[in-house]
Image (cartoon, rainbow, N blue to C red):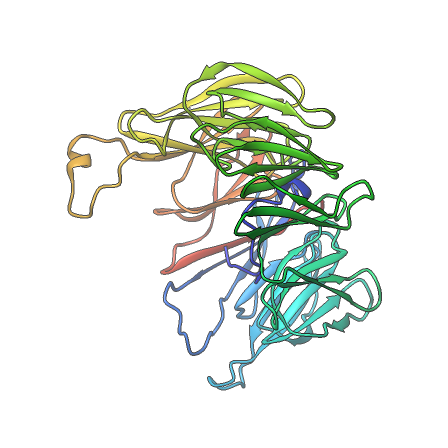
Length: 487
């Protein structure tokens, strides 16, 4: 999909504080789908924009099609009621290359006339509100669409890059242009923007993460190790914590509790000034062997060679889930924090998987079962659909041959395949190879089929309706943007 944001993502995921996925599919839901093909080679001197087509996907057929103006960036608001575009100005010359930000209000199957909100080079929507952060070269401003006439608030001082919104959309974290190690925190809750500066002096900040209630933690490194700097937390939380080593991963697991990993040492929780070690990693490191739940409160780890669930809502306690053991890797949670998958390391290719196991109802009544095994010469990878109802399992050749090497074909290696496994019923549905994208409530799936073109599959419960071709394939790369369901 087209990249609409200029933010720099943190090293560790902040998914624990932001999940827009619905808990169940919206049966019969109508949804706009933006789709386009654009060339892989782009003129560096001037961008002519991508011509999106908006298709209104109903429960049985595509009911309406709208052509959108050329744009260099497109993006939906979190509630799906606004569409922002950054469109080239036709009269500007190559040396100017001006762009205009436009917002379109979406009400059911109706698009309003575009409203111009000034120059743009990039933009980013707030995670929950109707606020749009717009950048025009070095100038930044906030556009508030909650009023009848959009209100624009300029941001004083030059910012280098947006790092992240807080989960409530009340605050913005950005880097300063003048001092690279200075962070700026912008409060967007008032009629004007209050800006705070946060300096790290000679030390380097690796990444920062917001908690669900807008507390902010940053990892700051110096020659002796790392420390955690914390702002906007409860009075019982210290503003600084010196770790006994270098922090290599970090996440919030409750609004007041952090989990972090120290290099070659172990994984710890930190709350109210106290650090508690959970387990040691052995010769492993990073999120490939443990993962906090995106909904918070739970952690899944495979450091011991067994699957363990940690309840971190109060005093940490762990429960071992029997049924699978050995070299386990890549635990992943569903977006709703209810289910998880874990892979068994391939006996020949250590970074790949030979089996995928589903842990359903992980935080309530864990049920473990194998849902995929690799065929000879193949390897697996797995992830959840955004609505958490399906596990997507991809099976591909374990070794990618050189262009001139046809030995894999001579050995009869089967072709790759992608399968969707329904979490509740274990129903398996074959999906087309190639680019695919789910609606955020799992009510529909779109894929680029090499032979049939751009196809939409409507999903009801554990069944896929026969696909409908949206358009034929065109040269270039496909860009797909589903309208989000209201959170």
